Image 1 (cartoon, each protein chain N blue to C red):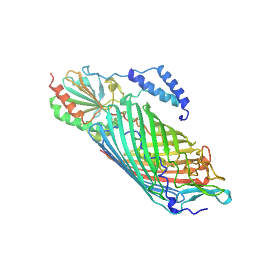
Image 2 (cartoon, one colour):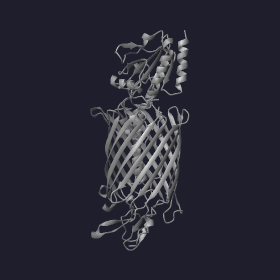
Image 3 (cartoon, each protein chain N blue to C red):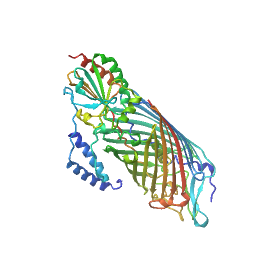
Image 4 (tube, helix red, strand yellow):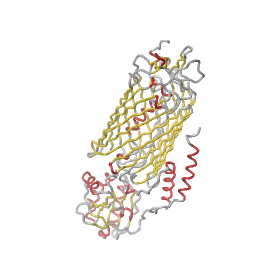
Length: 175
Length: 75
Length: 378
């Protein structure tokens, strides 16, 4: 029994695939790899508006996290990042959480509910996540004291916590 | 490059069926609007009433069911 | 006209229902893996026809990192009068003959399933059952889902197998078999930052006893015959959904269209438009309208002047008709973990709106429902 309009659907599909072959492709981002230098990223802080650069923190280990008010897993990652900042701040860890929200209001609404004891900034232009070739939300990058990317996490799950902690310890202990 | 080609293929195949135009690549950090609750493709309440409608055979037609997708695309 | 035994007149909606097959997309693994939902729904038709009260609960429990256990349970109570056949009425206008007494039918149904995630894919296995006085069902399904293109594209497919037994109140243990196989495939594609489209195709094949044991057909030349439908039925349906956000009104519009066709000659189409808007303090309102139309089955006639062939039915559900209705709802996220939703629908079923075939005004009625749902996520 043929589906309604089965034959015309087949014709359309053939045309569709032919059209796809002729389409202009936008450049797609290959993900960032471990060992690459951390790309430049500057964004204004959410409290105060002073613009920070990831490069400012050379000499410290930076945990760069991209988040958004609309990102569900970020509700779990924020309390975890507070723990990390408390635990390793003294040893030279700086967590920098960059929101990709379109407005500061959206970002602030999230922070009211999930307060952050680390630096939070806003990049609504999409420049920073594009520079870091972000593959999914949220994403975090462990950057060592020399400004090299040591580890990348796409997504945040409970089981990532132990791994992240260990990667930070390794980066902090490295010369 | 490979990923974008697949995306374009999927886009054009679907769009051709609708004769719509304009399918843009949406980056993971640009999914804020799609993540809004009002944009959710699956509505559990609507599903319940759909089920009741078909369950009680109010209508003779079969119901093609949902696929999911859209949203924030978070991991 | 022979008197109709009240016992013959039990509600048949459930017996003819599509079996409780939840061939739907598996839920996305989320950051709140625990979920509990409860719904209470009340449905009624005009003219003392069917009323249904439904209680439903479902739960989602994570077992380890990539495995989820899901369960659904539904219990409903049906009562009300039900049409048995059509007969000539005063002024040459055909009228419905309904059961006199209010009858009650209690249905319990449930299903359990396991979902496993593998990277960008997910597979779900489900087993379900349904039981009431004169109908029982057992079904299995398997569904898969795969996210591509950084979750801009979602592919899904599923199959379900259902094994039903249909009996009647006169002979409750005498079950006739009905087997059903369902298949669906679908794709969801993000079009741009504020729009997406989803298309799905469903096909089902049913064979066995597909007639309604409580329905009769009236033959003018003498007698009432039992409802007699083909022993098999193939149905195909395609659904397309377009969702877009309109910044000017800060709202989302959901447009859904579907077309369906089957081997009984029933062709149907539906169109639905919904508007959804978020309000401050985590309220969400939605409102919309729906239009549906179908043509009558090849073997349908409101009544027969002379002896019909082997296949005959006067069931209003396989008649030609259309319907138009509205729906509206309100949702409130009470706490980050808990939300409440209230929704209502009202639909006008009219033979005049049919897309083809035959239908009678006596079959027209209005139905409405309201429901309350509580959702908890942890």
